[in-house]
Image 1 (cartoon, rainbow, N blue to C red):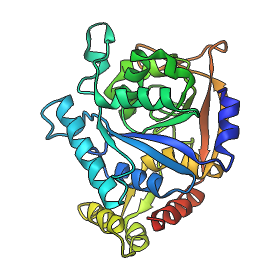
Image 2: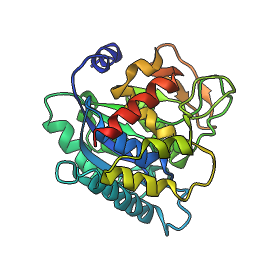
Image 3: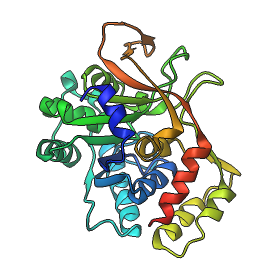
Image 4: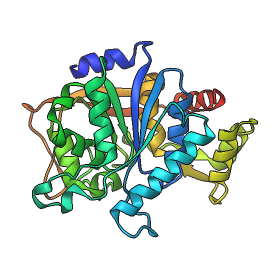
Length: 299
């Protein structure tokens, strides 16, 4: 599908099949984003992958961080009573950036992306809310899935920023380069950047979330418990933007642009002849949060 067809698809009422790929062991926004996706009536989460994370301080190595994300993903699926219809898989045990010739190793998450994509008669949306490793590895292992998936990636800075200093893109920078250079249908949701420019930094008051989670359901209890360690008055829920792209597309302003280059010195470069991607210019938090609360109540 072209990016124009992707935009038309997400604006349609068709229920989209999703593989949710997230470093749920990293921060609390991942858990809320997965629950949001599971509760949306415009999304069918067919699989979830626990992605690796370099910022998990108690992880022994990359593989251990992926195992911790897997365990946290399973916890959310069980609380939402979706573990019987949405299987979970472990993400990459290595960073592509560390591999000889950046070669991927086989692991359950990439194999799942490949299998679901090749067996599907409709496009699969891979929501990557952590590092790009799992999606990039799957594309390297089976290039034919390029025509079967669309990757929605939360990462990088907005185009006005000078350097690509954002966490998701830098955890496995080579994987990020591979992903944006692959030509796969691609949605870029910038997570950081210049003041006043569009990023997915959804700042939500902790008390507001607690008030919205006063429903007698296992998932609301689980998410309230997830909030407990956070004593700050508010928190940034970046990862909600990935499912919101499909569940509440009216909450964004998008442009179709030539794919920027992620240079080796971690900056943007531009070439007007490159393949097109969808780029988020602006986000409307009130629209998205209204949809988040609506979908959590569905669980």
